[in-house]
Every structure is written in C-alpha cells, then in structure tokens.
Length: 325
Image (tube, rainbow, N blue to C red; front, side):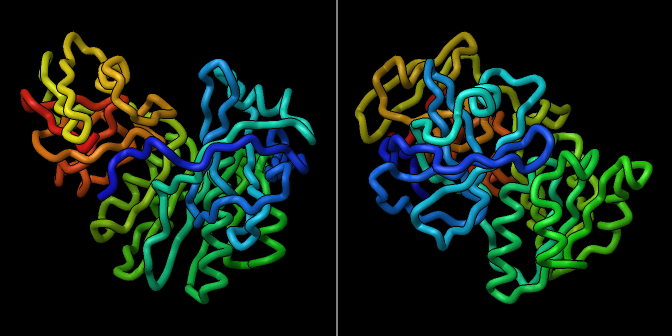
C-alpha cells in the first residue's frame, strides 16, 4: 500500500481543442505545448486542474488511453459552481494554458467476466473510457446511461452508434419518469461488477438497489462528499497525536482542526486537492492506531482494515496515530 504522493507529474499544458458535447458540457483536449507525450493512464483515472488562487478541481479522463499525446476531459457547467466549472467554461479557450497534476486513479477497473456500467449525467466521462476498454478486451458488458434529457447527455449518440443495444440511454423527459434501477438490479450476478458514477441521488439508489448483490460487486465514484448517516463510525477523539514516522515529527491535533491542516502547519510534505474526502490525493498509510474515517472514497474493506486514512476529513479514534509520512 503506498502512502500519499508528494511528487507526481505537474505541468502546464494547453487546450488544443475545445468542443461542445451537450447543453452545458464542453470537452477539452489538453496537450504538451512542446509535443511531449503525457503520462500513461487507465480508465477511471482523473487529473487535477490547478486553476489559480488555490482552486483545484478533478475531472475524469474520457479519451483513449492509447493516445499518449493528449488528454481529454468533459466538464459540466455546474449551476452551483464554486468557481471551478465556471472557470473552465469561461476562460479555457483553445490555446489557453492550464496547469495540471496527475493522473491519479481511485476508481480502477477490476478484472471480471462481465461489467454493468451505470452513468448519470456527466458521470459518463469515466464510464465511456471503461466501456471502450472492456470492449477492446473482449469482455461482456452493458451500460445504463441516465439523464434528464438527451440534449444534456454528452456522448450519447456516439455510444449508441458504436455499441447499439449494449447501451441503454434513458432520458427522463422522453420516458416520462426515472429509470427503475431496483428492477434492473433485482437479480444479482456472481460474475458481474457494477461501476457507477453520477450525482449523489443516483449513487444512493444504486447502493440501495444492489445491496443484495455479492460483496464487492459495486464500485462507485462520487462528485462530492457523501452526507453523514446514522451509521457513522465511532466518534473521533477531541485531541490526539499524529506521529509522522518518516519525517520524525509528532503533530498534535485538537479542537476539531482538520488533521491535514495540522500536518501542513507542521511542514509535513503531503499533497491535497478536494478537501472533502473524495479524490484520494492526500491518502496516507496508517502504521499504528485506529482512524476515524469520515471520507466518501474508501471501501468498507479498506475502512475495516484501518491501514489507510484521508486526513483532509478523517481523524483518530486512538490517542496516537502513526502515519507513513
């Protein structure tokens, strides 16, 4: 298990091509201005856009991993934008420079005989690359692509034209209501993995509708932190110490201060991005102690093992937490 990275590919790329993909969605093709190849990536990976003034946003790569000279992302203009998507839509024109970091993959494809992809809205971006990958590999797969209307659904025509009946496009305004996920997931399969990305209401329904599937069947990626529930793990201590084994530094965390802030204030080299426990950039290895997980990324198995923690939102249930930092 690797600890959080403090060094990874960071560069200033340029927007070579910008195209509308749907109402409120643009695709950007990013290249190195010197023509150099970009780092390899696999479906499910995302990159950080460093937009200035501390604004960092993550976007899934949706192009072809075999094309080493360009990265492609799709960006929805969020009506409740906190600055990220608005910056992309208003300022990143063709030829514009943009600082990037990555790629990073917290949503990797696991080997399986069959796959079911469930995409909601702009959640199609990682799903598209995944479907193309498993198709090339010769695996069985199907996709449910759900949205409000076809005009807002990027890539739907390309997917239907290329894959036909494997892709079910469901536009609520055409069908007169929401897709019945409970019915679609009623019969669990021992050899099928479900991958889903989209807004939180969709992911909550997918989680509920697939709860009776074999353990480990569902893999999801969230846009934002999941709301706390009554099943939140035991409370964190009000005060605890974080021992950074490799740095030889002990940091005290108290009074609800984010662990990440305390580490950064102590000069511990650790990368961070979303600050919401979603992207996994600050992921650190736990050597001793028991984390109090508050993230929306780790699987139940990872939480149970207790050997990793996302310090941007999580804390400690033990008086001392030893990290490989």
